[in-house]
Length: 475
Image (cartoon, rainbow, N blue to C red; front, side, top):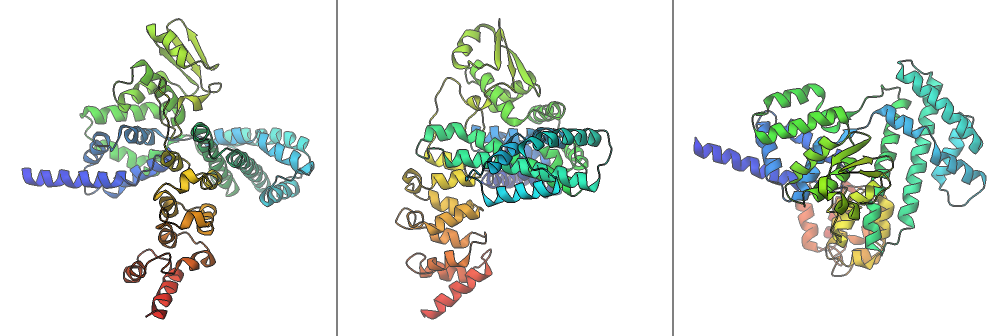
């Protein structure tokens, strides 16, 4: 029996160890949350969830990975109403209308198409009319909140306006990425949290706008973990857990607290940085985040800092943070959150200036296509062995992969010799004209081509046919 128990434990350890390899801290917490939920769903009948959970919490590859996992459990999907409310100010859409009316030349075809569509369907022609549209959208939102339905045309117009605001926000993020000094790694590290948050918000606006266009019900805030598992399955999962285990009980307490407070993880990470400083960086991410959650609400935080008030003031002078005796108060709406979190959106040591390697910054910027293309122009990036190869394997961006396949410095030479093989094995549908030149022994060895033919799992059929034809020709 003891032997079986050891075998079972080893199997769970191996499962979780392999699972950790699929988690990328560069990904949004929502992506990690969905992966964790699906892990439990997949093995719900064969492995006790307590075993998997304890292994996740007790055997992470690093403290930062544990912190990432905890934020994944606490990640939340904002209320659709909150997203709509934020979107319908139309601040950025107004700038697009102004710029196009003034015939500025820095707008894409997509921006002109959005402008023309909104102008025609919503009957808006000037920047001032955007302000009127905002007021009308507020009345639509109030109707939706009260349970009333909008007309089909009103749903369409609201959806189009929100998609326009999402596009305008993404344009702003792309402009910052394009005009950032790709050689200044310190500036990159400061910008990454802002760019990641902006891109995620733009995507959330787009998702909500799509819901509205399909006349689907808009929802209240919910934990991403719960959203993926579905509420019934979450309660079933909780019932199966060993709630007498202190670690399990602590995590559940944090999740239940978060279900009522719904604090965005980046805000929680900022408070966690303060907690780390006050505890002299002693303890674990579990303790830091648990305490930070206890001190925080959706709008801000309140912490009794005692005699450390003056010392904290030397590393945290922020207009959104008020020092009152031995207590500090923070307002998330006025704080510079990005100064309290790292480029990976995790907590930082406030009294230590951490420098990030090129590899770390690239990993953290993987989801921002414009920024990634800028980074790939930097020799500090493409001269790091296997770094471009990693991007070529993991990226699903047509923009990034096209740049790698069409730029000689990125796909040739000793440092990047593995890039051509990574490109043809990437499932993204890059045009064949970009990939065909790599099907040649100068880039991919005949031995590798024969291995692909022998084991073609996951290969695109058109690429496999090209490889077979090439090998046949040189026999």
